[in-house]
Amino acid sequence: MRVPPVDKHFEQARSEGSDAARQLLSQEFASHARQVVKTSSNDTASQDKLKKDLLEKYGVERTVEDGLARYRLPGSADGKVLFETKAGPTELIQSREKLDSMVQGKLHQLYEQYHVTFGKEGEDAVRPRILSKNKAGQLVDGPMAHSRVPRLSELMGVEAALYSSQPSQFTDAKNHGLKFYFLKDPMFGHRTNTAALYASDLRSKMAVFFEPDLQPYRPITAEDSVKRQEDVKSSIESLASHEIAHNGERNMATWNLEKFKPTAEKLGWTLSSDSRYWLIKGREEELYRLTGDGMSSGKCWIRCDIKGGALDEQGKAVADVKDAPRFTNREVREKALIKPPTSYFTNPDEMLADSLMLYRVGEEGRKILLKSGSQLFDAVREFDQAEIDLRFGKTATGLSKKVRQEDGKLVDNQ
Ligand SMILES: [Zn+2]
Image (cartoon, rainbow, N blue to C red; front, side):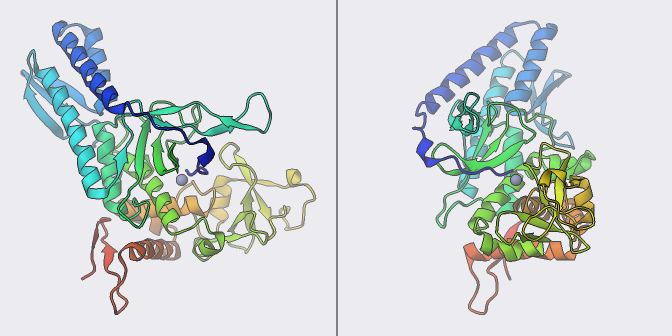
């Protein structure tokens, strides 16, 4: 999902106390761990709390068998042991320290490798403009949303997405990368049906936000979802990949409608003659557009002409848009000239972001993308390569210097 950048006007000074907050937090972890150790191992309530704690803070599960404590990532399909250690009175404190240092190590590695950063514990992340409750139609400052330290499992999911999305994580021609915020508070002050979104943060820098109800059991990589027979879109990797793709679209200036139009046409869309609406093309040369936000209503599409004017089922003009026959997302997806590869296609940017995600996350994703035909697959590959060329350039003979392998990795073109 993509929302308009927060107005610069409402930019706020960033909280500078985040290091102190992190220190406080690790003290809190340690004292809690000591309390847990002091309690009897038969105490089910404290065991439950410990379990919840490990899941919530790190995305890990701990089991003890024959005196051995094993730590696993429940979001990983193969249940591989992250580490194991002798269970004992100091084991929990040490294991938490180890998990903390694994998180810190991963944060450092992702910065070194991809130049991306992450919101810290309690950091002010975003304060979007929301509709006023008192004055209809007016926008006011919404509640401040804060970030938390990412779980180890989440960092691994984002890492997988970065591996196959390079160079879309860069926010400029230099080496600045995206910032990721795992939110403690919902982005708009209330729950929405999105898990992640791409928008600007308090410093007006483009960032990826993950909503707070991200479950620790969520598959880490797209491969984990495939192994668990879940939707390929359900993983942390896929969520992150979709949002990183939006940043790639920004790098490719898709906000410039005229510039984006040729790509959108290849994806099966066109722009209304007054440039107000994106219209998706049907197989019978008919056109459809969304009426509302496309998310809140089951019947949100209407048939229209090139100006966006509402039509009835026979293609005759309808005076009032309210009287036009409605179509569901599913119906329009089936009627589309180029079938959107997923059910999320509110505009060509979203269809492209989901298509790029499928193209990048591995074999299963590419299979799904290919079901929408080779025209879409080729358009996505071209767009991806054009962004790679924009960053890394071409040789004197016109060959791309870098290309993407099937597993998503960016390599020298040899
Ligand atoms: Zn999106």
